[in-house]
Image: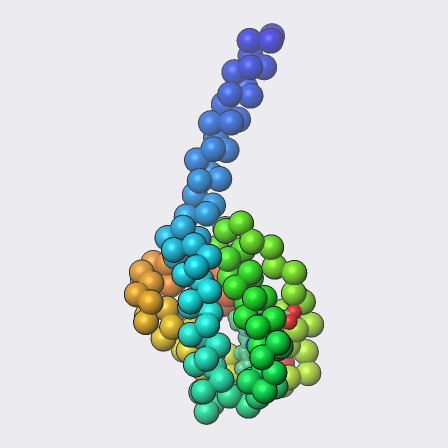
Length: 145
Ligand code: HEM
């Protein structure tokens, strides 16, 4: 009986080990935290300059502390979503964007800016799609108009 318990435990460990390796595959492939910080810096800069959506980010542009907090939240959110060792402590997406009146076109514009940043840093097509696949489903909580 004990022998089977040990075998069962061993089988469990062997089954979980490759899974946990795969869990942070996207984080690693993106290049880790440093690369995510670089992408988010570029991405937020693009959003703030994008005439389609820049008005949403006017308060951030005016307030460096607010901008820094926003970027930190975004970095942690993307890092955690990619399986990295970060913890997102910001608001949930519905609360964070409540009352902003974000449209589907605004959402598309923001995703376009993100893709431009990912392309600038030569993020692989598969990683880009994987990341967009994680963020895409958040649309229904963000678009309210
Ligand atoms: C998948 C798409 C999106 C993601 C992952 C995302 C993520 C975030 C996160 C993590 C925050 C910070 C929440 C907090 O402070 O606790 C935030 C805030 C915000 N988001 Fe989004 N967002 C998305 C789409 C959009 C869109 C489409 C717009 C407008 C065009 C937008 C405008 C803003 C603004 C203005 C803030 C407040 C920034 C501040 O605190 O100063 N977001 N978003």
